[in-house]
Image (cartoon, rainbow, N blue to C red; front, side, top):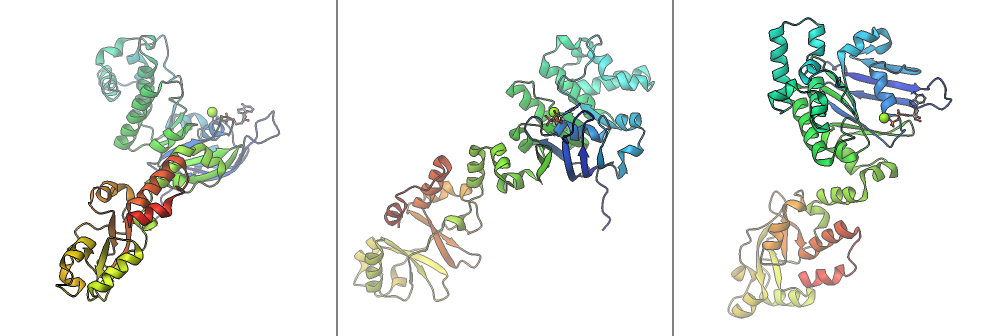
Length: 391
Ligand code: ADP
Ligand code: MG
């Protein structure tokens, strides 16, 4: 298999600004593949902007190498390099004395496109920004901050640059405008297949947008991973703190599987006598038993009410057992089965494997536990009592 050249690669990169002794970033290595949405995240001063600006040589590299498309950025003509790479900053970079139209066709105009093509381009972009065409002839100050940033984002993503750097582009926007711009970037990126490097200090933003998250702290690389990896396997306390308690417990709850909470079933062989069944119910303080065959296949259940009604006219468990329709598999997520478990008349749901062998039960009490943990982050103290009742 031919290995694709990464769009950007940091190879043991260190940056020391001329007037300081301390490195702003040190020994950073990671790759950004084509089409990836890479978020650099960290607290203020962690080196995000420093790192990003080495990609288009707005910052020089002190040690190590930054490669774009497999080529050391030092070997590019810096003007050419910057022309190949889009750049979006917080205050959108629109020229205040130019109309939106003039702003968005600035570069094509320099490239001497025909008037007709320039107009087409302006119309295409304002559509992508989901703004009315009449806005083309307004000045930036006649648009809201969010609308200006829409133009900035669309201008960068629609240009023929495959790599786009965005440095906290939505930092100054209110949450609602911010969300709509995040959606815009996400849609455009998917439509147009660009590679994006996006600086943020907001984990929500990173988790929403990124395919790859790079966590920085004090100029050092702490963790690189997909949002799922970061969320479910944070490398250390610092990453956990960036994620936040609430989201961590949410994530934990999101991935709880049936097998993680199931408990041992109270079961009886279908050939057993009703006497045995009654004795077992008494001993285990339960009013139903799951019925299995010699190979542990789930066959049905019996309840104490039926047992008392039919006894002593029938002799074995198989004569009075009733079928069970609702079961769950061990690998299913608990979150998908909450309502099924709770809505079933009984207090539990049997867990069976692919061959319908009985491997456990999920009780209402286990659900209560999970909910408690989610809300208070600890096990409910009276677990055992509840479980006894439920069984
Ligand atoms: P971030 O974008 O994560 O907030 P920066 O990359 O801007 O962090 O800064 C990283 C470190 O480098 C900080 O300690 C900052 O003070 C320092 N730094 C940034 N730019 C310069 C500069 N031009 N000259 C000297 N030090 C700088
Ligand atoms: Mg910064």
